[in-house]
Image 1 (cartoon, rainbow, N blue to C red):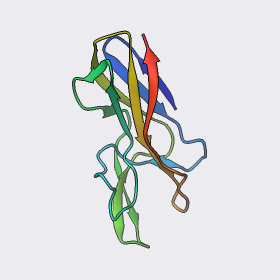
Image 2: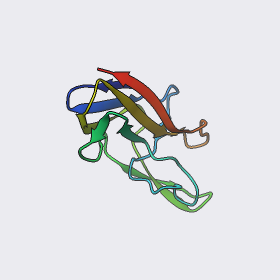
Image 3: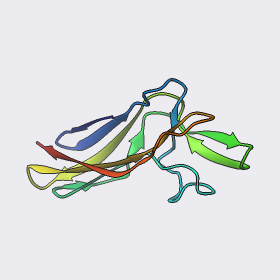
Image 4: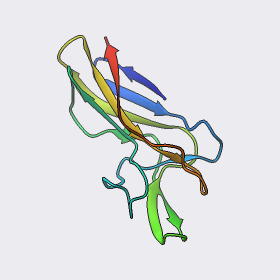
Length: 120
């Protein structure tokens, strides 16, 4: 994953490292669906203020899991970029990300509320 902050946006590129892995939609409810999934998300704090919700460069598709009879919103396999409009109030701040990468049979450990300090 890479994070970039400019004068008006924060951008996070999430890249699953294994082929056939997807990320969950940023619109996944808190706690997932039936306890499954972690929303892909980008927020900011401490010198950075979001001015709108993040947008994704990939469409959302429904992934049905018959074994648990649940349908989850996911992005297509591969990388996803989230862009967050923001306002800066200093020379540094934190970009905070959450995500989980899964294949149809395996999920990697999720990352929740991981902060990266950025200067600009």
